[in-house]
Image (cartoon, rainbow, N blue to C red; front, side, top):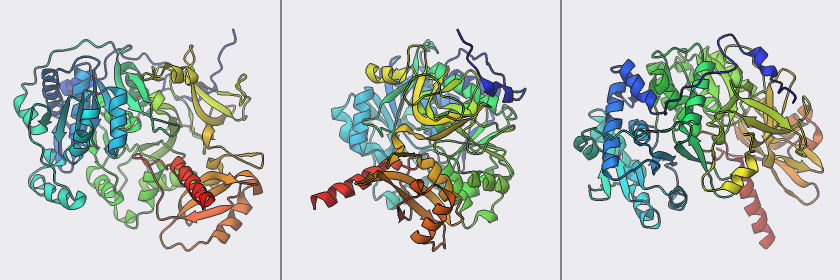
Length: 566
């Protein structure tokens, strides 16, 4: 049997082992451990309010006790529909403490989306913001929900912000919700007042027991629940810790802009911070000016993010007014990181910004460039410890050669158990020997650095040519007057598909379609040049700042259908 070749190991610095001996602890063990080691140390900062590790652990135990009193048993699912706030951290660990399974739910979901996820997961309880209570109440009868736990941003604001916030909320959302304590509706302050914090410990098998159902975005049909065990999440967090080997336990301050209801923010901010005893700065939504203010005041050292976040900060008119020099390391994910953005952000902060790669199904990280070591522009880096990756030929027959484009497949202890109640779909992407088909197209160079050229389903075939949107977008991002760009394939009667670019111009730019067309023709082959340009004020994005390419494709399809019907 041939030995599997791992050229990337040659680039690992001495501080990063190729193989790690992972802990066999459940995920919630690390909150208890940090509460013992760093009891009075600040764990959370939220809009002026701070909580110590002891306070977070005590409140997690109090909520865990209350959940057991309501009948929650090992394996039961609990939906958490919260932005980044103390309650999101406390709820997450409370559910895990008693053997429950967290179902992370996007607070932006409409009732139809919420109902689908609750039905699919079979969640017995939901923990949500007060302004989201009507949505949960409206779908309750159609789902398996038995209890709704309600909290509000004001519950953790310092005085006098906690008194003022309800008025701000009413003005901002045109709604004032005042749910009352009842047999199936439970208010957060009441829970913490009533609970004694004595819950019945539950034995959890980290390798076998689920910690999380994380739903994918559903760009290819209905969203699927990705089953992640305690072990999946623990090992990916420990990989992160080893990759960031200059970070020290109990010392770092981590900026939590990425939402915890997305697996990337959950692992790279929440789980990593708790494991390392770091202080988390929680931001319930991204606002460029607020982020700049918080960085200057709170001085975070680690800043996981997404390209659109870094782009928004770099293009903020007041950027030069703020001191961002505390930032030491940033790991960018969710979308391709333009080289120009990487270089400019490093210049502004003095820290390191590197691109990584992963998926919900891999907890999420599988690859990254070295933060303090060799990195390759345009590459998503090399596989992490204990992680194997290869490129499979387009026809699925055997491995591709160096530089040959094929599908990226990965294998490692962070790979999911499978899709919730979907064995057939699991079998389509996960082989019996553990290789996961990512659906991403890319190639590997001789040094073991991987390059993602695009999602398999996003590839544009125009006139018989394969065109990868990322390649065109990289050229567009190099233009000094473009802030954001996304490229899609739209139906074309002659070429099959043609290339369309959606552009957000930088403030004050008056660049025209003709000028862009001339620029593109100088920098790429004619068949790749966009045939249509559309300028927009903003582009649709996910909660982590990933541009929603598929929603633009669907928009174009609707336009075509409407024009044909006319």
